[in-house]
Length: 166
Image (cartoon, rainbow, N blue to C red):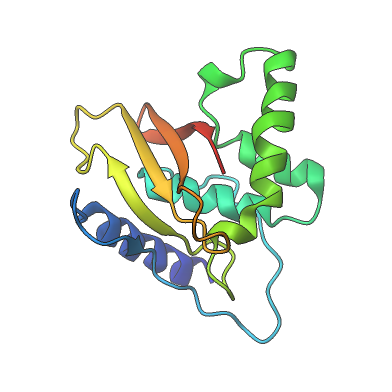
């Protein structure tokens, strides 16, 4: 399962990295749904080498049944500058996490746990000098809504979430 997941992530990163400013929204490859969905597992060391992989893992975290485990998985994907105190952690939980978890299905294709459509990325291309990126994700339920914006920032070799409007 992990090899399959790693392959899908690699394909998703490649597909998203080749998009341009004026291109059509690029779907992240669909993960085939089985007849009975597998339980979501928390990866103790998720690959966060691209912004797209960080979003993918955040969407997986939102589907974990246990609220505490789900928030802990999401919190591991948040840039440390955003969680500097217990108060900041609680604000993150109340203002971003609960909305993100509740609205998960708005942004994920039917039959998937983390297959989303990116409408735009700013900057359009990542370079070694890129330190922050904004990825806009299409709302698949409320088609007239503006895409949700997820801001990510580098932290060493990882991309971590700064904020999200999902």
